[in-house]
Length: 146
Image (cartoon, rainbow, N blue to C red):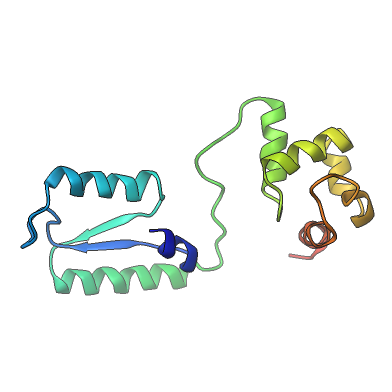
């Protein structure tokens, strides 16, 4: 899963047939645990098919959907912050090269999301943890036309 997540932008696991009915003697609980881990810890969807023909049909359908929706940007799913400070941190963590620690430092330094969005590269690199490359990447995201 680690390599799949590292090297594939949108990984999917396809399982053809019943994963618990194989020639290999593996405890069904172990298989179930592995599949739960793939979906809940690694966030990789698992698709089940019945036969080779069903697998081909499923892959073709996935390819068509990928082509149809390639320009659609999905909303950030999952966590939806409730508190104001959490919302501010969430917005900042959507920026390039900004994780939780840097987001907090930015808010502590600039005091508002608006001031961060208006900050120059020079002002951004004054914040601990933001190098020139990161500051330029942030400004590129904020300044580029859609």
